[in-house]
Amino acid sequence: MATVDTLVRRVQVAHLPPIDSGHGIARLPAKLMKDMNLSEGDIIEIVGKRSTAARVLGPYTEDAGLDIIRLDGLQRANAGVGSGDYVEVQKATSKPATKVVFAPAQNNVRLHGSSQALKRSFAGRPFCEGDTVATAGHQRVNADMPDNIRQLLNAPAFALQEVRLTVMSTSPKGIVHIDASTQVELLPEFTEKKEGERRADVTYDDLGGMNDTIDALREMVELPLRHPELFQRLGVDPPKGVLLHGPPGTGKTRLARAVANESEAQFFHIAGPEIMGSAYGESEKRLREIFEEAAKAAPSIIFIDEIDSIAPKRGQVTGEAEKRLVAQLLTLMDGLEPRQNLVVIAATNRPEAIDEALRRPGRFDREIVIGVPDDRGRREILGIHTRGMPLGDGVNLDELARRTYGFVGADLAALTREAALEAVRRIMPKLNLAEETIPTEVLDALSVEAHDFENALKR
Ligand code: ADP
Image 1 (cartoon, helix red, strand yellow):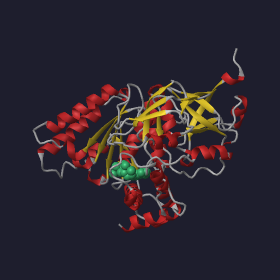
Image 2 (cartoon, protein in one colour):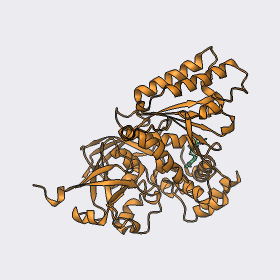
Image 3 (cartoon, protein in one colour):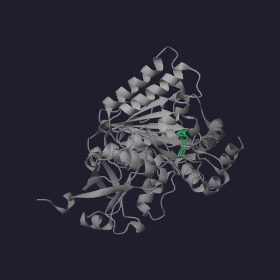
Image 4 (cartoon, helix red, strand yellow):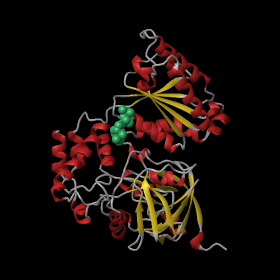
């Protein structure tokens, strides 16, 4: 017989705003918490296609009466769901782990962090094997949080920027947390996930100033990829191709990757200029191969960056090779069947420069303009790139956003990296470079200050 404690409830997933993201918390309806005998700070198991764990907080005031659970992008990936899907939640407990092994969740990241710092960064936070988790900084947590949770979330920074780690293994299995006696191991390099596990290197939470764009792409790409049956039933064909246009560094690549991850689709990246092979027929062959591979791996997204370089207006190209490549791309697009569950997203900053034939119905017949971010967008992007950064009290991101008129996402990312490097330069004299890991006292003292941003702005 079910007791109150084992009550399982189905609830619809919604997006958790950035202020609460990355801490491993979930926001639940007040009524559901009451029904399930949950208090703030309790732990729940969340089951979608996979299962993960979170610490519970009550709903936002504006969510009163809504039957939704708010999860951040990493949690959605960990549970194998997207916004709008349903999960089952159940009250749970977490066991202290005797051992936890982490590895970087991203390619091209080599970590030599101290496991001591890692341990402190994750102290008390519940997770399961296979989860992707983000390291904390001295984060500015939401003002409405109870003190005990605020304490828990104010974990010391592990690095100067947020680092994403995959929980490779835990003992015992199930929901665990790290405590003083846990042995924590950090593998230095990215490890390919097991079959069927979703990559959470980039989610919608990692894009600032793009809410409307994300909504549009969710409808055009994510929905058909996730629920092809819906479209078959309605007898409408989802788009095969979407063209993103906007200046370089505005997040087009990152967006395509996030849509693939959130749709649980495989991601194939074609860099326009790179595919132009030298040998006769080489580029067309490569293009055909990628389309074949993507079809086999479907649901898939093929992302063609700088499409203007492989499909310029045919009237303007002189080379035979370019003409053949455009023709090949058109043939491949025309050959795509709706039920193949494959979408091609192309990006360009010169939409007027691409062959018009590509923009006809059934090819890239949807277009989304990605503009330079406004004040609010820049503020969101700065928030994303300082996530997990130990920021000094004097740092005012609102003001920085106002002062960086004309900056695109890539510029803002570079600015925050530069500011972090300024902070590192300041502590360099205190470091004993012969030592393997940086002592915790030095790490604790490390923070990125307002003047670091000033200096970075001057560079
Ligand atoms: P594009 O494809 O438009 O040239 P990218 O997606 O390659 O731009 O962006 C480059 C980098 O700039 C990203 O990896 C990210 O760090 C940062 N960036 C760009 N736009 C955004 C955004 N809207 N939100 C957060 N970061 C962004």
